[in-house]
Amino acid sequence: MASVIGTIFRVATWGESHGAAVGAVVDGCPPRLPITSEEIERQLLRRRPGQSELTTPRGEEDRVEILSGVFEGRTLGTPILLLVRNRDAKTADYEPLRDLYRPSHADYTYQAKYGIRDWRGGGRASARETVGRVAAGAIAEKLLAVALGIEIVAWAAQIADIVAEVDSDRVTRELVDSHPTRCPHPEAAVAMAERISAARAEGDSLGGAVRLVARNVPPGLGEPVFDKLEADLARAMLSIPAAKGFEIGSGFDAARIPGSRHNDPYRMVDGRLRTLTNRSGGIQGGISNGESLLMRVAFKPPATIGKEQETVDAGGRPKMIAAGGRHDPCVLPRAVPIVEAMAALVLADHWLRHLALRGAAERIDGAAT
Ligand SMILES: Cc1cc2nc3c(=O)[nH]c(=O)nc-3n(C[C@H](O)[C@H](O)[C@H](O)COP(=O)(O)O)c2cc1C
Image 1 (cartoon, rainbow, N blue to C red):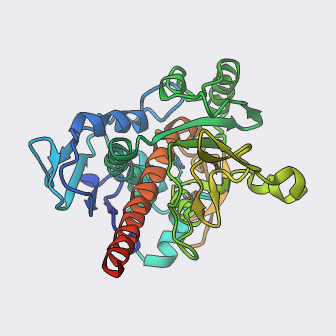
Image 2 (cartoon, protein in one colour):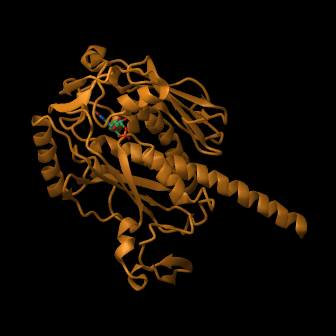
Image 3 (spheres, rainbow, N blue to C red):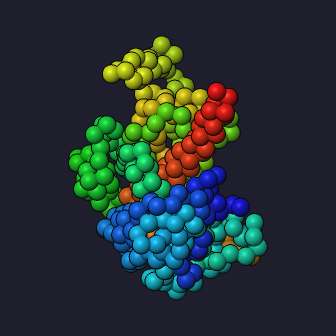
């Protein structure tokens, strides 16, 4: 199924931008995990539209309803249905775009594929779909925190050509949320905010990059060869709307560095195998090595802009398009919790897969002795 991710910790998202609701079904979450709607909403509120001048003004509250799978504040081990109602959809804004294909949006490709599309608000291609990911990701994140002490922090590391150098060992969510850009570097954050506001005023949009660190990830997560940890992370990240590039560790920089400078030397530190550097981004051979996971996701500038552009309508007639309505001039501030959610979903699934494999091996060893 195309809207499902995961092997043991499985998540299906559902819903369109201007439908009745959006959400997710989480199947395979272990029982007895404490979880509340407040914990889920904490992440949803960071994804929510209308949270600052730098995002779309669509005013959704994004309250989550947990319809199944949680009883007296703990998971039951049964499917968890998470539902968030769409309350502030303004379909009239999209009437003028009904028969027009927005350049670089998904209008044409959805029509070409399905022969029908919900044109209101981008339908299923809208970032509204990511509500389900973030809600499910909050459960995965709680599982990882409770069971393993894993901490996941993402931040806006680049907007257009403004790059923020940030120490991934020290960055916290509190620091990230201290500025509406979600860039934890104070000077860069101010410059980024100015650039986004200027782009919005010109009817234009901007791209950028999110960085993520996952700390306390144990060695052993990842299933070579096709389900290598970085392969599954790449798949998860590139499924986010507007995501265009993924790197683990040194990423594309690895192409220009000699091995002598690229290798991460091993050393025993306090009885634990460590690497002195982390250009591998915490993954070697598709398996986590116990160091922090470090990754970067590139996002394109949103397609829907106020500036006039050439396009065609559904009948192939040439048209000019200049979109009104409510749009993000830059997805970066809102993409941060989505990137965190996707990392949490992949890690939770791989941890459960690793437990299953090792648990079975231990039984085999036990039977053999
Ligand atoms: C948080 C977030 C907000 C977004 N907001 C908008 C938006 O306001 N306008 C827009 O045209 N695209 C927006 N997008 C991107 C589109 O959903 C995406 O570009 C579109 O579905 C086409 O898919 P693709 O860019 O992956 O090819 C947003 C993406 C994210 C992650």
